[in-house]
Amino acid sequence: MKKVLAFDIDQTLNIAKTPIDDEMAELLLECLNHFEVCPISGQKFDQFLVQIVNRLKNPTSEQISHLHLFVAQGTQYYRFDKINNDWKKIYDFPLTDEQVAKISSALESSARELGLWEEDKLQPGDKIIENRLSQVTFSALGQKADTEAKYAWDPTLEKRRKIIEKAKLLAPEFDYEIGGTTSINAFTPGMNKKFGMTHLLKELNVKKEDVLFFGDMTSPGGNDYPIVEMGIDTITVRNHEDTAYALRGILSIIS
Ligand SMILES: [Mg+2]
Image (tube, rainbow, N blue to C red):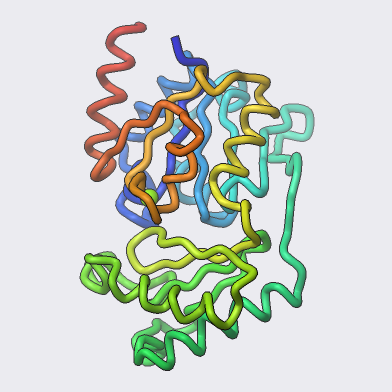
């Protein structure tokens, strides 16, 4: 029996960048009665709150104590601190300012050269490149673009592969991977979901065999692939509906 259910977020628990729906919120709450539940994603901490935590209906402090947030691909880890009644950062591995600057300029000039720097399509106040502390994320249409436009931008991943190819020439000391619908994540080598999953195993004091992972980008080059490569049991989903289907199955067996 697995002890830990770990989840990619975008496209695995939700429609990319949006809060989980009522059904997923109920399923996750039920999972917290039986498993340690670990979302692990390139998103920032505040997005974990908006998209997952705030959607759980009246969780008990016991339930919330089994929720572990592996932020920015698990280079940051947050756990709920019952005494202070707030989330506590357990560890953090940030990039330096110089690293952030070098990655940002490599991504921007590569996208510009390819005609893929589409600043004119941004919503007011939005931006293409975001410093997520332990990684830099390029989102072609910004964070606030509507979902349909995002899906339509690069369904074959071709645009992002081209940007990565160029950026690698300019800043070869970093790793680049495709995530979400319009995103590229860049970070120091090894700071991918494998790093996060390795720390998860340590922090929760569990073995690889204890974990079941759900992700949508599980093929080589995808941001969930490093976890597959580790030999963690993985369920590949196309969307949150697949995940809900699998969770209903798991919960029906154990309850
Ligand atoms: Mg995903």
